[in-house]
Amino acid sequence: MRSGVIIKRYIVNILIWMVFIPVISFSAHAEDAGQLTPEEKEFVRSHSQIVLGAGASFEPFIIQNSDGSFGGFDVDVIQKVEAYTGLDIRLELGVWSEVQVKAKKREIDGLVTATVNEERAKLYNHSLPYVQFTNLVIVKKNNPRAIFKPSDLSGKVVALQQGNEHFIKIYKNLDHNVRAVYFETIHDVLRAVVAGDVDFTILDETAPYVASKIGLGENVEAAFPVGEPYDLVFMLRNDWPELVSIINKGLRSIDEKEQIRMRDLWFGSINNSFNYNLLFKFFIFITLIIGVILYWVSLVSG
Image (cartoon, one colour):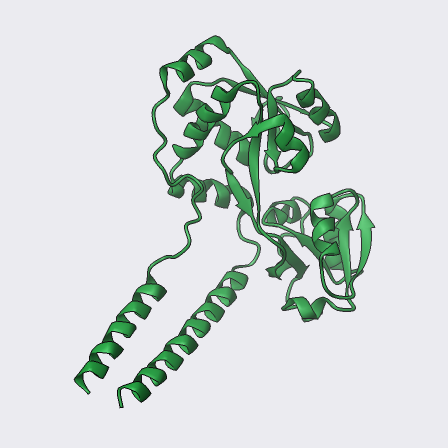
């Protein structure tokens, strides 16, 4: 009998630690930043400026102000990297397809706000991820079409931006009967959701910024995540291996608190109830597991 009590206490203690100790780290830069090596310092000294390209419409990652200066999430990250490493990074904006051609020809030194794919992996070194996004099913405020889980998408109509292959790919991987309607811009996609012309769209945490820019920030919310999260990285010319090492050290120097501050500043939260709902489901799940194990222990201990 006493051994059964001891076993029960032991299992309960393990479960408490499982519930209350964080099991997921959202920081991509857990290891120490590290000092630059002599070779890396020489690289910084001998390369007066690094030019990275981005799409001209990549807000809120990069925002060109009326005076020609830049702001945005990527700019904040770059400034932190510059401060730590001594690099001087200049941004060049343009049509995304044309910017990529320039990077391939090494007329510029790489790309920002980029994802890794097979083709790019052959052309560039890539940095550590500097931000990760979750794909979200976005619906009209108060969710009038009752879309709460993947099975609710069956028979619905989704708005997508023409040419946005990332979200189109997620749509094509849905296992349900969903019809797509395409629009030229993300602005038009969100307007269609709010107007009720479609049932939902697929975007990510940038949706609050885009919606607020067109006066719809209070009119949309997230229903649930869909697909796999994706990372953004710096794509850097692969004949400069020192550059990726230097930038990685700069990225590691940004502590988790500062990462969260910058993310909240530019992307905010589209719907807090979405996060609480997931948390509630998590604790319900853990509670059920605890209940089953305790019941099993009570049977074993007699």
